[in-house]
Amino acid sequence: MMISPMQSRREQRGAVLIITLIMLVLITLLTLSSVRSTTMDERIAGNARDRNKAFQAAEAAVQRCLAMVNGRTYPGTIQTPAPSTAPNVWDVAGNWQAGAAASYPVPMPSAELAADPRCLVESLGSTSSFRVTGRAVGGSADTVVMLQATYSEE
Image (cartoon, rainbow, N blue to C red):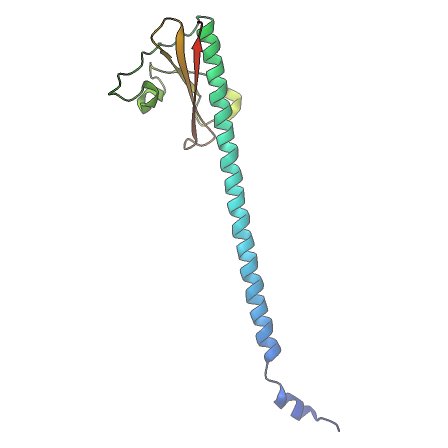
């Protein structure tokens, strides 16, 4: 038995077209999800890199200032710890601004930082015990890392 072309066309309902369109929508959604995920991964990696850069700069600043304190060549003002009712000297944002007398800049021109790291030295009561705080920003001024070390000759 032979089917005529007219009868064959009447039996077709367009199911292949509908299934193809649904598959196209699904593939598009998967592609958009993949692009969004990749973009987020790139942001996370960039932020981690920026924080690592700030951490290394803060560590270098602390090391340089410790060497200056050890060699008695620290050119900045040695701070005294704040009374227990006041915020810590290193916790006051104004002490880290460019030109602030409380902190000393540690230039790192090749580090590609938003600003030079700074260090702050506090006397811890005796003449030979100090707390050195280093603060650095990464490539973005929003990335801030602060590290501390204690130095004592005793």
